[in-house]
Length: 341
Image 1 (cartoon, rainbow, N blue to C red):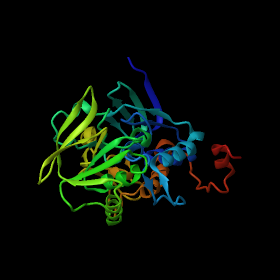
Image 2: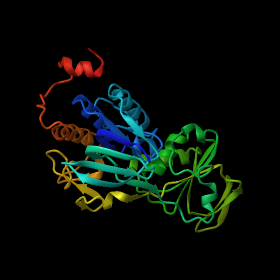
Image 3: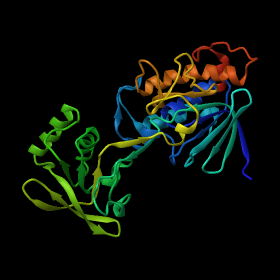
Image 4: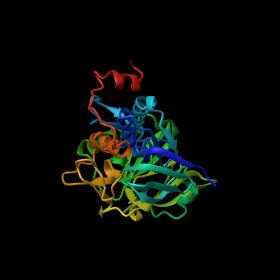
């Protein structure tokens, strides 16, 4: 039988908010195990836009999703959290008085007093365009996210879509790609006007192409894309393509979370704003997965929620221990925990 893992707190989700929760809990002397369905930390930042710039993280005028993840991992090193990747929580049994038993699809069992759900928007899956045979090229020539820019250097790219992701990656990859063709089914875009203006300027300068139409067929063999057939209002044409980047949006699924006896509102978990506890005592939800009046789905909001949640978690795990509020700037006790004494 699999070993039962005991921990003060179990965090579901290793995105930025889940990582910062490790820090806030660590300051209060709580150890944490972290589970994520992905194969690495960073959540949506690592999976969907690791190299895309983020502009609203305090004190960082600009930082990429990967850089933010790396900084958070560096920050929580003193607290030595244990990560469990490629694993998904299947069920939560028990209560705050007797403790919670958590099981995963990797056959792990955890016992904990506190559960923290920091699962972003749930499980995000890219929408696959309705192109016959596209599955044969997934992961070798067809990509739904840019995780490594160098993969696209000197390649002939076909980017499909009319939203921010499609336009952003046209602009970001144009300097290193051999050639970029942007394909959208109409002239109007859902992207930021400035991005559209910059894209059209590149087209006017002959540095990329924009075509109104749709992909009707992909050509290639052994998972390697060689060309795409495009259908427009005027004709059907074939262009040489090494990589296809379709940005048709994402499908969000709560998955097993919907079966955890939590009060939901749409695809989000309802919480109170004093501690960000859910309708199930001992189970907290922070970050994009939660909802409350005035909720803003921002990373910095999740950081704030993590701090308040951590103090409530401490009261549950150590009910007889008085918590003295301390500042990291002046507390010798916190300096010792952080290794900067």
